Amino acid sequence: MRKKRYELMKKEMPIILIVDDVPKNIQVLGILLRKFECELAVAMSGEQALKTIAKVKPDLILLDIMMPGMDGHEVCRRLKKNVETKDIPVIFLSAKSEADDIITGFDLGAVDYITKPFIGSELIARVKTHLALKEMKESLEEEIGTKNKFFSIISHDLRGSFGIILSFVQLLQNNRDSLTSGETNELLDDIESTTKNTMGLLENLLEWARSQTGKIGFNPVKLELEDLVDETIRTSSDIARTKNIALSSSTDVQEIYADKNMLLLILRNLVSNAIKFTPGGGTVSVGSELSDGAVKISVADSGVGMDSKKISKLFKVDNRITTPGTNNEQGNGLGLILCKEFVSFHGGKIGIDSVPDKGTTVWFTLPLNGKSFSEN
Image (cartoon, helix red, strand yellow):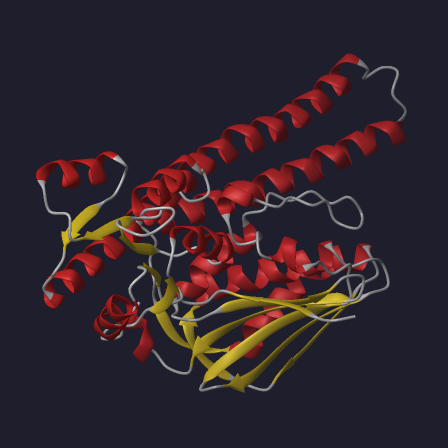
């Protein structure tokens, strides 16, 4: 079975679609646009443009108006009626320079209107501006969505957790004389387990909230990786023992440069997740190695694994995954999101390699020294 892989990477170059029925115009635009980093796509008719957009969603469209068959106005009209394409910025390029023509272009939803012949430097400046505005808009929408999801998590998860605890307590109070000692102990165990899960949720929520508001401290220092891994394994040993899971470590790199509290939280979350999704009798191991000038730390398990579709959603707050563990352990879905935040503080990357029914390896990188911290 093919191993599924996911890695958080920098944003790819923007894709610009040029739509014009005149090859010479396309050539001129191509020469201009290649002066800055972008991917170019070309369509020589309105019909071809719509087919291209359906396959490769561009970040910006330079659209001629006067074309045989479907003209630019109709292309823009259809794009704005489609929920999948309505937010793609369209810049009309046309020899039609009357005020009514320009107004019509904006009424159809275009973000700009440039008349031919145009000045190359002006066109490049407008293209850059609208790409930047699009990126800012998407970033703002994501931030708003993230914060809305954050409040949703607080209201839903905390209400649910405290509701369960309250119901257990009421059950004890209302039946204290009829419950056997075994039943009482079982309820107390359930209360303890739910309380621990709720505390873990609160801790993650508070840490994540602090990272989002910029109020979290970041103090990287030289650390002994083996000591931190041993501490993580020691604090996780009781949970692993209840599932008969073997914990081990093999650290090839000894000295690292990181924020101790952040790194411990990352390791605890990753090891806890690995135990959660590993059946009894399985294994969880922590390792480290030098890779491409950085320290690569990994947590590997022999657990249930996952497919690429699920992996791609794990680091997104608005697609929070809360799958129960192999013993029906409950989670809150914030652990990996918090790990991503803290890895990014260090200027590192985080990724997942997984095979369904075979196991998962979650890895992250840290720079060998603190030089790259100032760049983030």
